[in-house]
Length: 362
Image 1 (cartoon, rainbow, N blue to C red):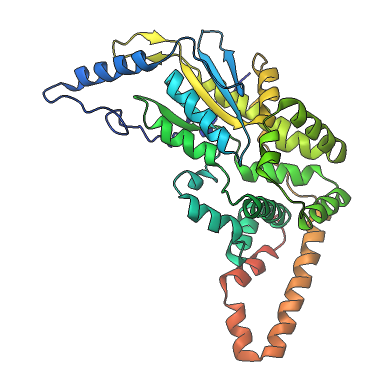
Image 2 (image 1 turned 180 degrees about the vertical axis):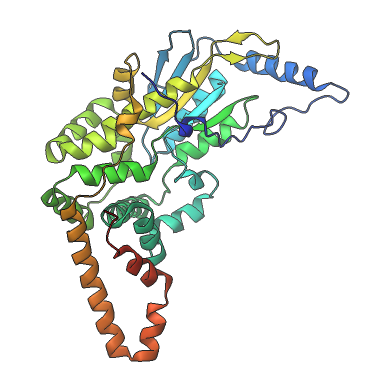
């Protein structure tokens, strides 16, 4: 069975107050109830019952008649942004759900130039934050994936997540529309992914990410919106890292399905009548087939939210790596002299590294 999870109820909503946003002016003298009724009627007039939507949109129906319009996107695509805007404007949803978690929500409020700079700037602070948040191995893997994102950003001159920012903006223009985060927390995904890989697979994956240099064009990105080509690519990835596909794609398909189904609960009108909900979900195209498969199944979210503690071998390996790093740091301090050495040891990054050397509790 579905189990409630705090993440699905997290609204970032630009339209917490239905009287704000890109909405028409309310005539003076109306009571709150009359204003709400007017906006409710306005949304009903704008909502199209048989909308002509892009081919990237899949419509799913909940048992109570609620509708989910699932927009499959490519994460560095201008046309995906247009698909999202077209869908939200046409169906005037009650809820918009995006493939983000609370750890990535900052991208919704950043402008394009700031995001481009952030994506390319992988510094010591980011490495330290990733390791502190996810642990050594998962943190380093997150940094490698950020490097891949920076590579694509540099090739295309476009920041990631444009379709999510478009959804955030358009949701603010729809009266009473809620905006929700639908993805599993990224630390859980990274930790489960790393735990599922063997040491050899981790090394192969890290090597491939470190030396990624293939050119990427906007045409290549748009091809990711073609389901047949995308499924072929996914099949190739499954052959290389089946455990990685399970944790990063299949498990998140289940989690996204759960949050999307939670969003399609019936809504209450100003007249206190329950009505079927209209929901727009914005997810990567690679998740669409999995969400379709899981839509009518019973789901147990607790199974994919647990993170097993690191094995003794993993802890020993991490300790050896950290020991080597500390040895190099100690040698640098010795060569630099006592005063500079003490200054280096007082740095937050070094203190954090020293803290991680403590053995795990028995």
